[in-house]
Length: 633
Ligand SMILES: *[C@@H]1O[C@H](CO)[C@@H](O)[C@H](O)[C@H]1NC(C)=O
Ligand SMILES: *[C@@H]1O[C@H](CO)[C@@H](O)[C@H](O)[C@H]1NC(C)=O
Ligand SMILES: *[C@@H]1O[C@H](CO)[C@@H](O)[C@H](O)[C@H]1NC(C)=O
Ligand SMILES: *[C@@H]1O[C@H](CO)[C@@H](O)[C@H](O)[C@H]1NC(C)=O
Image (cartoon, rainbow, N blue to C red; front, side, top):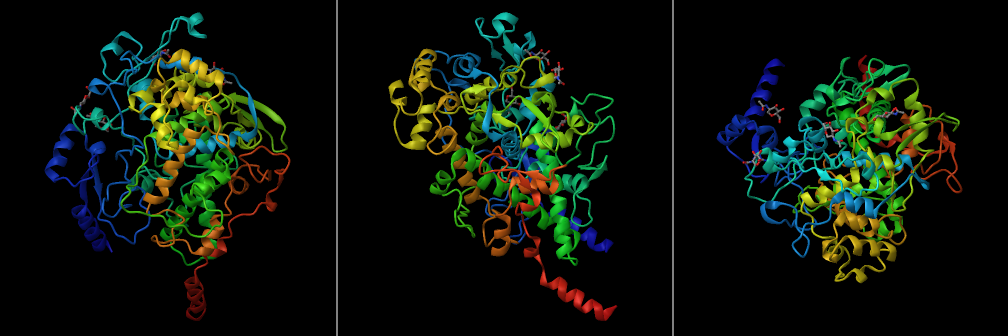
């Protein structure tokens, strides 16, 4: 046994292949040594075990594309819907007349009003799922960079640091003309160039630590070692867990914990999730979703073990993980996005199937990548994020509230008193913010809560739009809808006249309009509640996911594919059922929980809400075994 172990470890080490994370081509051990010396191996090199075409989805995303094994792994480049444009030295492009574009903060205050107007339609839970699904494919380092590593961007020292790109606040700013504050901290997004993987005289290419696939990275991490060490219980296919005051949690960092939960109010708040990655501790909504999907894994594993007593821990774990990922995708594609995009629009554009059954659009020539535009336009959701987390008891009585920005990096709060129960109840009772061209004042002024004196998340979003070199809005309109916009007047029909007038006031030329600025003011698409260009760029990526992911859950012929009967069960997954199964004190909920309860969506008892029947995973070989075991014992 020991011998076999040594041989396999030895062979494994010898067989691993090194790839350049940027180009995706193999590199020599010599080149890897150079990276070791420069301490750039972590970012610039992917070390990958040889691919086995019959293997399931790897945690590190490698071997998704058998031709290009490193594509799909972390630290690999984004795709682009449209190629980037920059001015000299890859600095943000200028206006059409060669002048600087208007300040990002000025555009934000001009184009987006500020207020807190609760939606009567969407719940806070919808926003939680949005941010959770974005967290799957991005990483936190670009924010940590200016809060922790380079906290001087607004100070004198920031002026000479290439990485510092603070946002100027104009003297007549509607809020800060009174405060005297003139600067918002920000750093450049890290790129393959800033990390030192490729030469600086090449087009900046963003680098993140998540895998580009929608594969629940927040739960399972981006590296196998980390999942084995921090995640797996190695019993019953489960993830590690802890019980505290009758509630089930992911394991926690040892007391006095970890840097990531830096907003924990000690001594009473100590909990900080010890997951394969730290992402579950970041934003309030992500934290809730992480707790639920963590528990959901174990819920699935227990159900599988009940129907298949002969399955090993490995088999249970991998199947539970595969189902958990499929459930997250099913809820995202078939439940969350349709409420904003319109179900019929998504069917028409081929992103969801109205008839169920398998779908196979896999094309190995399309690399498993995320377009850089996708996580970026998702930031439109900042406009519909309510600044408060409202808490309710299980009978729907309002109890208390906390600003959502205060919960960032503060897992300890969730474990205090019965906060988790009350927040869970609140998630499907409280509204998101309205879709109405207004953003919550916490999002636009103190978006990072106690971590930063001032923070306008939407100003940062817009400023990053430029650092990524996105083409002007009019080019994306052409990409999405084929029509050329040559003058401000051509925007009629897409944008309300009053907002066109503001655009005319703030931009000199229609070609100067930033992608995100226009998305903020576009009229919602027909049959939905989201800006059409946002829709287009999200749909573009949703399609890329299905086409480029060899392990896409709707495929009939991927390794360990679901049977037709199993896929039919996956299609029953809803966020309401998930909360009934793993949410604290949830016994009643509305069936479509991304929408507020009401006419046609009345709260009902959990036992009236359909769910997955795990009997579809019944493995006949277990029965044969147990039949014979009667004779043996
Ligand atoms: C080497 O890189 C790692 C990962 O980026 C970093 O955590 C570490 O501090 C670096 N070490 C040195 C000596 O720079
Ligand atoms: C590119 O420039 C940045 C910032 O000056 C520097 O940190 C980085 O090491 C450079 N990269 C290369 C490959 O020279
Ligand atoms: C939220 O954080 C701010 C500091 O950023 C603090 O002043 C305020 O009291 C906090 N609110 C709650 C309800 O915890
Ligand atoms: C910028 O960051 C520094 C260091 O964290 C902080 O002291 C300062 O208040 C920040 N500026 C603003 C406007 O938040």
